Image 1 (cartoon, rainbow, N blue to C red):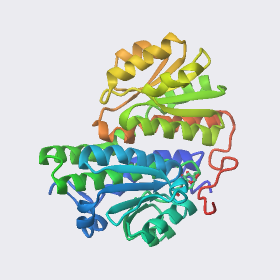
Image 2: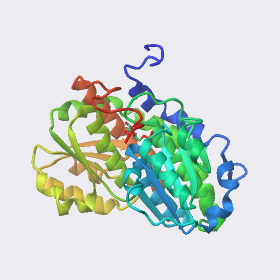
Image 3: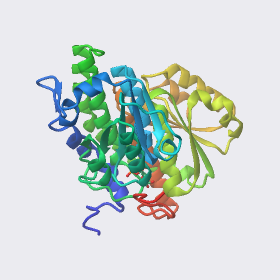
Image 4: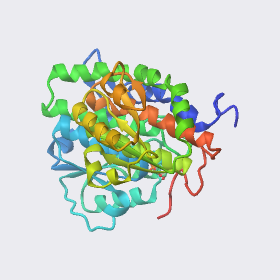
Length: 369
Ligand code: G6P
């Protein structure tokens, strides 16, 4: 097992560090920058269906559901296709309205999650076209889907999902960009810009990983907290949810993710000098609004851990701690802002002596209801 961990203390840490390579493996052969095209057989072969779709319904569970939420922003923003994101377990029992003009995208690392599998069987029975985004080749969901694309993240052993999440976002971004190009909802120069920036993501993830020692120091300060709040807006709202989930899963500290602006409708009541609040406050995307959310937290003496763009000064003045990440386009920022949140939960769990790779009560793949 030590050999399998490749010199890392835990599979989770190894998998966090594998993300630059995993993301590259996901777009390799699909993103052809010189030719300025994105090529994915599962999408090309069914282009008519995608272009005629009334809407896309995404079904998933857990971390994969969070990747679905990020995809909702990307698909609507770039390809102008309405998207609904559903917990597979709710969708399948709700008598949902599904038509032949709907496309259902099922996202699943393992490809074996019982609720997600049942949801796509239901969707198929109603005539919807089902597209699978799975990591495990030949898995049940991959086989049941009408078409699909693999993430190629490599085996993920740690129960808390890391590289599966960022590679799911990568593939969904490729699909959204491909459809945007086909629909003409993105200009060719913006499209090229995305391709260029996507190719720079692995290097930027690598850079974000270098904050490890600094994040460990922050983890040591907050490891004994009983609660933690995660806030983000826009593309980074789902990242806040995922950050909170990571902390819960492996450190057993109660954490909640919230859209930053919703804070005033509830969570703000929890804020006092004992409450750490992780805020994603990168430069692009509602930056000024997030800064004013941070001011509201500060006025209530909450402890602010802010994820900021390199060189940021405004938030640095307000926050108790800042973690810098490289700048990128807003739509691609979840691929970068997720990294410090993964490391923060990892270090807190290790410092608390928890079983990081196999947290209590959780399973890597939930094959029963
Ligand atoms: C379990 C795992 C999570 C995962 C979820 C969905 O809860 O512990 O890490 O996100 O299942 O799994 P899937 O394989 O469908 O992505």
